[in-house]
Length: 298
Image (cartoon, rainbow, N blue to C red; front, top):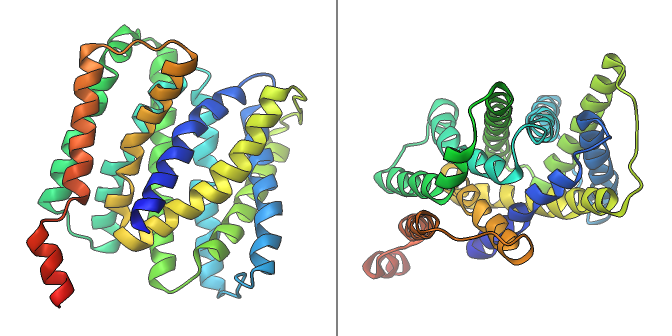
């Protein structure tokens, strides 16, 4: 089940960066984020209710759902959508992989988790692999003000995402259902984004073109409902640090799509990066045979 959740998260979220790029245009970023999570909440809440999973939670838990909504289904994506105006989606996916470090740090600060040698080695291999994979793109990007702004926004959004991971872990430690808390958090995130739009006087617009609408529905249904459901379940099974390692794999999916449809050219450094990332995955999830046998005996 863990492998299935991990693979599902990687495949879904590895493709959402392209869909986010399809949302960049005449529609303000805040409005696109609102459309995405309002649609996701409108679909998820009744679905969870029909499944009998929409349970009552305490006021304190609702407060944490509000915080989760702001961190994961609101302001972080506002940063990502805005960043797409300044840097490309591939570089965004690279920066988003910093979630592995943010989760490790926040896990220690807020959950009392221990940073193991295996986690540090896997993270180190993954980060070096990511840098190598995108070395050409990183060195080709001129460090102008717009580029730095895009990088800053993306890192800020990634840290918000990491804080949302910690809140989800908190929910699951209290025995709360993932889909219940996601339904509430998405609703609160959409409401918060609507308040931001109204208070800022942002104009509501809609792009009726196929690319925008198809990207919107993909992000709302597949990227938000299915993707976040799988990822937060993964956090409950293996912890925030290991689950976040899935973010290192996202750029590989994006590059595969780019190779097939955009003519991406694999350079030597990119191949080295791929090998290092796969090695990091092996370190993270491989278990010695004697350890597996001991676990069965116990």
